[in-house]
View 1 (cartoon, rainbow, N blue to C red):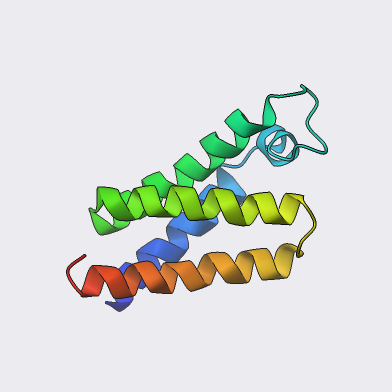
View 2: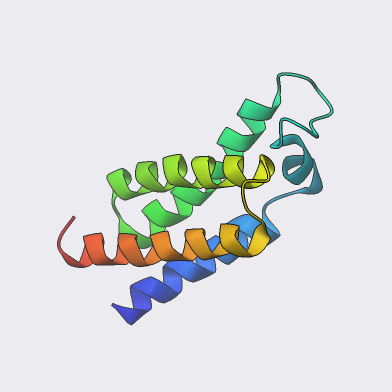
Length: 107
């Protein structure tokens, strides 16, 4: 169980801080995007990378899809300035614990 949590957290760190390029960080935000109308594709690609890491860690396509959707929504909220970076990261970590709980229940 702690091994899976570690995999989920490491995957999050890679997806949010190593594999998220400056291009992605800027253009996933509809208010800052350089190319008008392009932000949904960039935000979706970023969220899909996160979903991929959750899938690789858990072996569950459904948890990978759930992570993609949840990560998209959380980052959209941060880009809308509904909350800041600390709340954003806190929400992401909370969902890693939720995925861990679901996976441990056989989900």
